[in-house]
Length: 267
Image 1 (tube, rainbow, N blue to C red):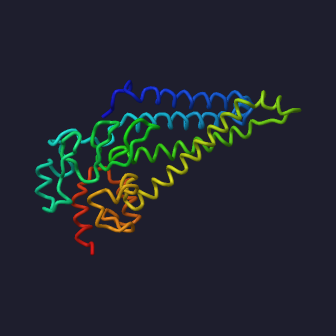
Image 2: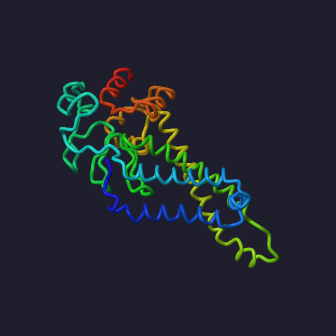
Image 3: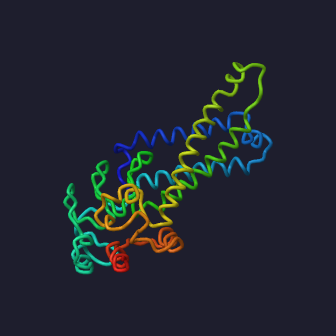
């Protein structure tokens, strides 16, 4: 299930953890709400904030090290059978048939794509995320969204805590000396908050229409989407059904069958 932690993403993951805990330490050491509450014996918010940061780090490693849905061999069994069995279940047309990947030469299910960084085909490929140094695919996409939500909550709380620690001084130079580290933390947290808000918003929109980042950005180059207009999606079952399937249906989907049903109703 997990890849080797000491592969190429080791430095990125280490930098992420160090940055997270350095900023957390700065928020505790400066005269912020966290420090004042801790000194007054009010430990509820400091403990909850620390647990939230710890949860975000744990989710980060879960998503980063998790198998995103690698297609490892032709003999891997999917939702309802092996690759050969699936070919018999899929209607015989050139678009929906399982195809061979030009890089790893394995049968590539529909919505899968070969990732040059990971050297594998990934089922329901969304994108390769340099932040986690891993692909986001069918198996870890839901965890990725949960991680983003928890990370955003921690970042917004950190913004409020950092803002509470600023104090006025007689001069700008003295103010920067006193609040320099806190100001740097505020800037980093602010930028990360903006990035996570945009990323989470885009992913929730794509999930609501049952599309992936790759499909949305490159649909005119994808064989099974070329015949559809920009407003049409053969995998879209409506917002509620799409959200339910994504967050609540923990199973591998035979997308060729879903596509055939969508194509059958396509005018």
